[in-house]
Length: 375
Ligand SMILES: [Zn+2]
Image 1 (tube, rainbow, N blue to C red):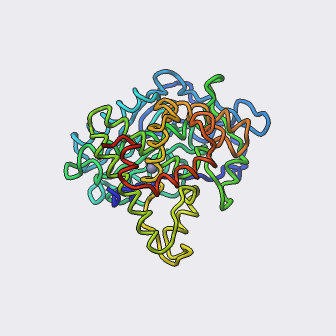
Image 2: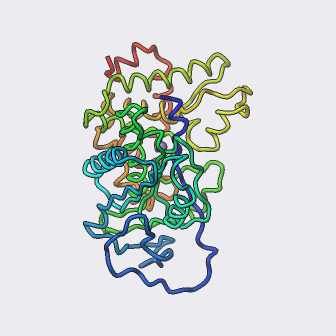
Image 3: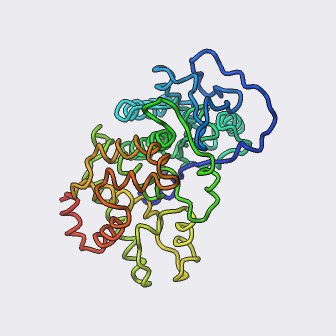
């Protein structure tokens, strides 16, 4: 499973639109009907209002129908069966978690689909001139401030939905990607006023080395998506909860044990930022040797299970409250909304959690299995 985890990338294209200073009035679409695989707005619309460095937007697609729109845009080589699998997962996830934005998922078959066509449509939706790097195992999704007006987007390659990939695990991966759209749409959404908004400075600050995304540390975003995908896929009986989490625990333990042979002590906090993950997972690691990959997924998912099984957080805290209140807490606490959400809903400060969880991960497998109720 780890092999595939390595290939799962949260695709996050953030770029500034501020340089576009041509003043062209944007004529917003008057119909709320959202057409699949088509940019909804011709360009980024102007905000409805601005206050305290925040720009606020409401979109024409914010109708019951528009916000529920799920589009699987498939290309040559993608079978009916594969489309059905993707649709089944998206519908289940949408009804379990809710949906704030219309969603376009690009499903392609690397080697069969016309990649030029795939990229052109994808770039138009994402409002970007650069395509993504297609592979047989691409699975990525997200919501960017720069193209939120076109909804949430994701891309999936055949490696994950063709019959030679274990079906339950494939569905879990698709669920994981849906969860990224869920997380990243909530980080911009204000339930009370039913609008989206952000402080552009928080986005520009992204260039800082120690930048923690709105959603929270990388391990929380990726591990949270994996945790939710495993829990909710097991609710659907697509996978078996205990064996699945046990294998994730073993993956996490392997990273720790391998690093330990070089006196490289693994801390969850090492997986806070993409830059630091690249550092510890390469020869730039202070020991000169890379750690085994992807503790942000395995350790991150186990961290969520630990919060649940120690009674610090309920499943609803972990999959709903944290994300639903993130935008509001970020607005009150610039750059630190995730810390406040963590403490409010996970019953412990992030700082103390790091100490407690790192300690837990050094316990025997038997003790861990008991606490995590995997026996
Ligand atoms: Zn991910």
